[in-house]
Length: 243
Image (cartoon, rainbow, N blue to C red; front, side, top):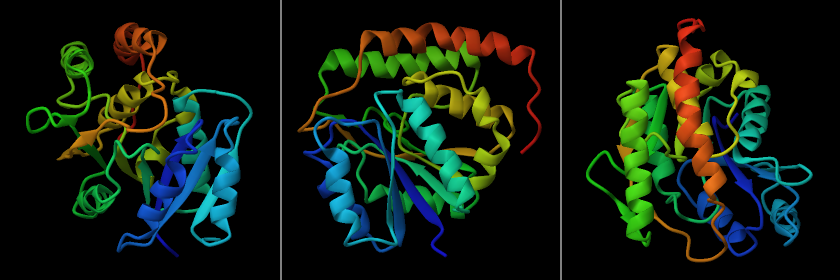
């Protein structure tokens, strides 16, 4: 039984999806992929189903109706992956901002003892390509803000390129994860650390998408800014059993 599943949420990714899947399936390790598609009107799901013919044992798709948010897509995928007994469960974007080659390094970090490995843009300076300076600064200082409010020692708290050991996702009460936008990434890291899991950051180079449309919005940013404070306050009254 292969041990690794890469969860990729999609919404209108027809320009990227075939290339990203072919790249993942070309890697040395036998990665499986689960696509969570939120009713992409551009036909992303149809492309995935066509590619499934070539990779029937490695490629899976779960279709949902309408845009339900990044966080709920990953929660759906986590539950699916746990049910199917994968040991290493990954988050990755469809747009090549995350280099699929780094899946090997993230997995190895967990094999070597981490419970959660993070592809970090900021563990060694700022490693971001093709972002405008305003967005680089917003992302970097968002992580500074999260460290200040929560006290967690994570340089890239909003990173969305990660590998979880299954036991982390089995321990975290996934139905209690509140955020649906990019704050979801912060909440998952914070909760894992509160449960006592070992988290490591692996340096990566993040390259902004060259095709397709970014899903970032001011609403997503607002959720993260105010949500972190609420998350910290709520954690004072919550128990986190050791993982």
